[in-house]
Image (cartoon, rainbow, N blue to C red):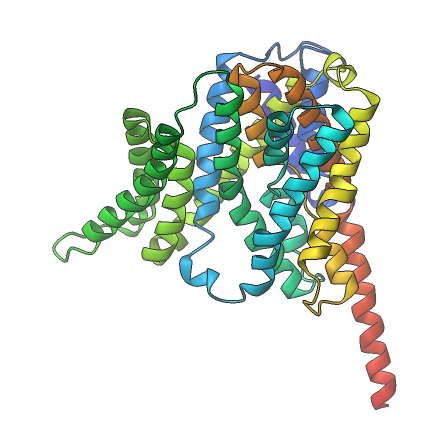
Length: 395
């Protein structure tokens, strides 16, 4: 698998410039490469659901990505220009969750806990795929800010819901007090450890070189990962909370680390997409009924757009900016990893639920990663027309 991943990574590097200018997507490349090389097609990568390698990659990747995503969101950042992202997160996300769950019950005849679990898995938008829009200057700044903050925060907001419904569907007696303690313990761990480290860093007679100072978040991440597994605190919520705490209390350390952290996070994201693709096979796709594909399409073109449209009512955003924010809610990396949590959970119908999730994510990656360039170009043409009109008026 290492050689195969290396070859695909090299290919992605070589075509990355072309991909940035066209509808070609590196995310799709890793997904398709994994599918072709997986056991369902060529069997070059013979991994299956339940393979310990899959569990390990999913656990480490989710921890690393939530840790780095959290560092993009400092508390002080949330107090600035919060109005539009707040609408998307506090109203748009719950509405998307509700509509997706109703679609699951009506179209797929899922039980309410199953439908709510899938809806929670699919609720987050992907910061990697969103960056294709967020990183383009042609897109209006307020839309880029909305999508950036939303995609940075909704992973962590969806995770507790995923964990709660996994526990409910496990068939075991659910101790909600213990579950709450695990979730709250994770958040507390993610706040306390960075605060203690921040206090140590500020001690005057201690000093560190710039290189080692930049590695401070690595030390914090290792401590949190280990302590979470020793104490039973949720490591994923701890990772996200720790990232936000670092960004809020040690911004200089965060700034020194973030480029390195982005490289590491990008590698594990691509690896997870590659493994995710390898778990997809013709048999997996065939296990989803025609109504399952209808559900997948409606989850993308109905649930998110309607929810965000309602959330942005009265915001005075032009219709084209509202449409961009409503459409560009890609289901990607966070949903991939939450889907793997479902697959590895051992709940009844885990594989079938995972297959439904696979179809939605796959369609989303293809649809959203192939529309960022056309949308950006459309805004660029609009801006050019506005400039020409203004020039003619002043002339």
